[in-house]
Length: 343
Image (cartoon, one colour):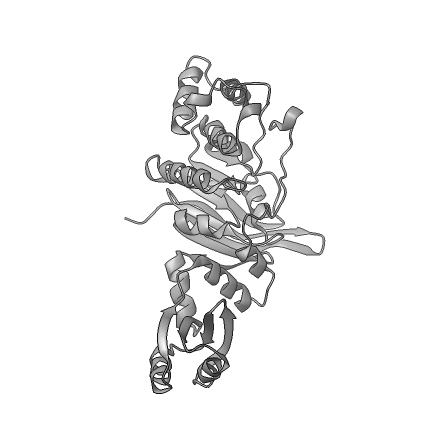
């Protein structure tokens, strides 16, 4: 049985004057999968999200969620879609439970069942223990989990998250990743994550889409993207051998199909348009070298990300892919009220 497609864009385009923010985007996201949108500032991720939520109109093309046109039927889309921004806003002088009650009133949830619903989403987000504390005392991770509880109140089929783990410590990231995975696997929800934190995306996403200059330049499971690069003659080897030195580098550069050799600490990174491991090993042994490390680097998302940007002729994604703990690439967008509460 074919997998059901729940989010579809067809030639989706958004222009701001002469700037094309999203350029004829064709994308399909399946029901129950976790899909990661990757790209640097200005790549088109946030604009795509805004069009999916019906918060900005496309200049051309179409976006649909569960068969509803995101532009013509925004209310229907919002009923089945939850959105977690990169900086969740709550009233700091209210408890977590009180904030959820406020959201329930905004969404006109049934007063007879709302308390049971609040208890259920607090438990799902592992926030029952802090539900009656004021949110002004919450850590970043607690606010993110309360944000997920807030999103789950209306029981959405699709959850869109913008930089959900930004600012969290490693344990907080691990806990949130587990929760996100449970939302997809156990609840059957479709999760769309916009993030520049490549390690998190690699750990949790079923598929990824890489954006550059408004275009989707690659899309698929990480393992497939790596194999595609290799099939196109993009190979990267890690080598360490003794004795180290310029003579070793010169030997490697002299091997056919090697295009460049760079150093990463004591490791040589060898780029080639063919798999040169066999020839390299023969040359090392013939030259009296003792190999310490010889490994094909392919499945690492950081490397895949960088190499697709190089293919697209763009180098500005490189620093995004390697930055650690960098702040969100794009600011947010929705209206806010007092104390930063979502309006």
